Length: 66
Image (tube, rainbow, N blue to C red; front, side):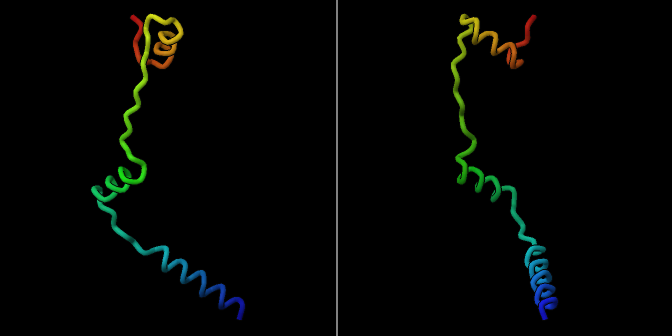
C-alpha cells in the first residue's frame, strides 16, 4: 500500500512537471523589465586626474594604455 502511494505521487509529479508552457521572447522580456526594472542605468563619475581612479580604470581594462 505504501509503495503504491509513493509510486502514484512520483508519477503524478513527473506528469505535472513535464508540462510545457511556451514563453515567447516578448513575454520574457516584459517579465524581466517588470520584475527587476531592467535595464538599469548605472552612473559613476571617474576623475582621471585622481591617481586612484585612473589606476582603477586601467586595472579594469576600461582604457587601454598606449
